Length: 360
Image (tube, rainbow, N blue to C red; front, side):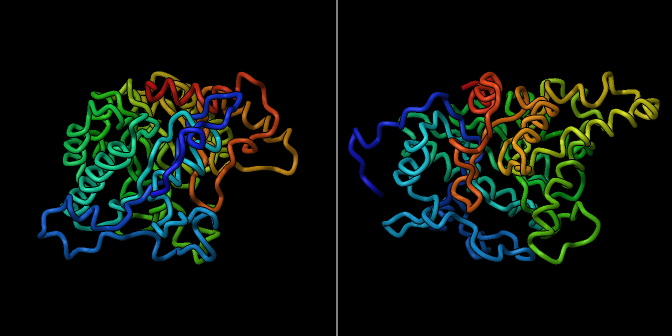
């Protein structure tokens, strides 16, 4: 790993504190994960991802490879230099992609998630984290919600695990009561339930759109459809009435779809509210209390004034949290991610919303 002097490690000054809510990290080798698995599982492959929709060019920033030859996002000193110190990041919320949820073998998916959590605790949240800048996510496999709840219980109270992490890909929308054991554990321990896009239509997971796309660009653009499906399901099925303290974070699924979806949903609720008598409020009124969304990828229209208006319409000042998606190719530079927006909105997006959510 790179060694830096005290002066080199001094963060760049910035006007705002920044909490980056989507930073991806990786093991330096898969042996780091295997050491946390019973030998009977060693023959099973640990890698996984988007076999049907491989990225056509490159996934990561071209400058994200550490000079010492380690894999991208596996060298903590290089990541600190390129992200934490460069932009003065106060905390980085780590999302390690274990790709557990597409697996048909629920038992292996569960132990794989557990092994990745052990690795994260030992490395990025442990020996790499003397200053506490890194905060982690408890990876779960939702195929067995009861086992997932046990995994949440195992890490609850850890000083650096601040949320639960699942993929957006699933066999049922997240309002389905089969997932209640997960949400119950999240609420019990005041841990937000976060979901990251990228496994819709993979393995046993259903594709949220109609049928299967033929190109990566089509699949990627439609990520927001999966999030809309999950969010409408959670709102209408009464998840936030059953779990009134539950918080949900939607990561890397776009932003601009939120206002129109809620307008449509509220309109239909006024007509069909007798169908869902368990709802005590309009669907949109649950959002500020229960839902947060991360900023990357932030759709950018040709005119900044249209983006600013959209941020106002979605109540970004209260529900949006900054994310860079480091180290991926579409990394959002904190200095240029947003156009000119009101100072109060900027500070809440970059810092205060995440600080409040994660208790930092």
